[in-house]
Length: 374
Picture 1 (cartoon, rainbow, N blue to C red):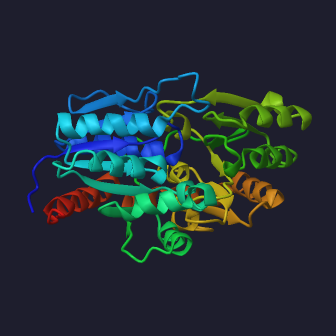
Picture 2: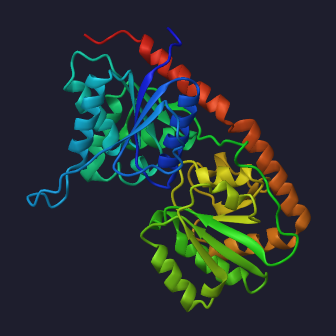
Picture 3: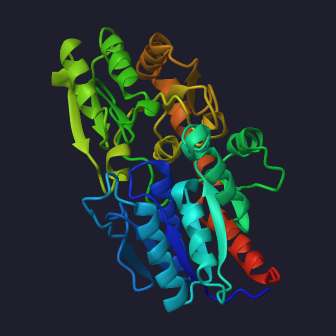
């Protein structure tokens, strides 16, 4: 096995969800270590910072009148093939199984002379929601099984993948990470109004409407404002609900934020009540900034947030419990400081960049040492 620099293609979604952010941050960290990184996505990627070793290849999809739905998967396969043959990619790292893992496999099949390896990172809803749908289950399983390595971002997700897809091969667990030199505590409020935030892609699975309901309840007891960070299909519904609950004048909508750490650093509390969370990158980033997190006790979130130590986890859909714990944190300064301190400590000790990128590099180099299949 050699530790030479690698040419790595990273196929991911250009979203503000965990999979897109993790893929972007990983690629940047790998480039800083001397690898050549080529991102593939259908739009600009959040958080990409300029460096000579990073290139972004936009996947253009032709909108022929014949196609009711433009075939993005075929366009991505073609772009991957172009890079595999043109610059001789060593590795294609598919983030989110659908369609990236399958596209990587197809591109490799079309270039039989290539020795490119495929690693697929499973992020959550690609397994628990989309991939487990009967319409996609078989092709998702095929793409996973034809990857040279499979990574899951939490023990919970690894177990769910084994269970849902009846996969008996090894799934490596490499948690998401956070740059604790960027995500760090700033000045917090010492008095009301307190600053509460919610960060997501505002899909139904993230339960953003529960955030609005909880905020309306806690406002009866605590003077606070709510900041919504990100964009997505339920954002307008959230604002409509806020109007009906008479709290719209207390909500700030920032939309997508490139340097989200500059907002989190000055936030007192993160409300993150996702209904399906394989890991919870937003929760980790908040913890690194010394921000207590309150969410639902689902999926892999307990691997990130220690209930009662770095935040609080309440039963799924218990909006009143969300609000009650938020009131408790905001009105008990000693508790808030304890949660903030422990969250920051755990982010630094368990989820730092160096350790997690080391694990990825080890996986890459071990793959490259694998014998070539006949």
